[in-house]
Amino acid sequence: TVHRLLRQLFGGGQQALGWLRSPHDAPPFAGQPPLALVTGGTLEGIDTVCRYLTALAQGHPAAPGPADPPSPVALPGKEP
Figure 1: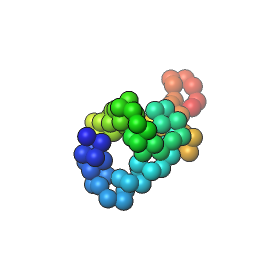
Figure 2 (figure 1 turned 90 degrees about the vertical axis):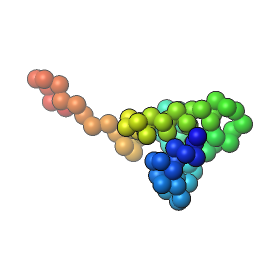
Figure 3 (figure 1 turned 90 degrees about the horizontal axis):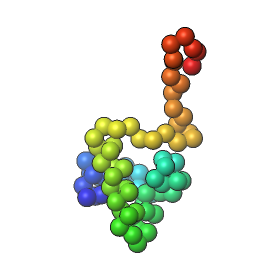
């Protein structure tokens, strides 16, 4: 399933491998590359990556990391 989702999102190839091998700051990865969870020897790790990729495939935005802070939201009557 992880392989299918990677092909769906990235078309496979180098972009998919780059995503798997790069450290991510999203909460499920805690600075680790997703590949570390997939090869960590537990079904929970594989399931975590699968759920994250499924959310991306369904259009949910990736969780921001320190290099990609969330945009400020303007509240009525307040500056962002």
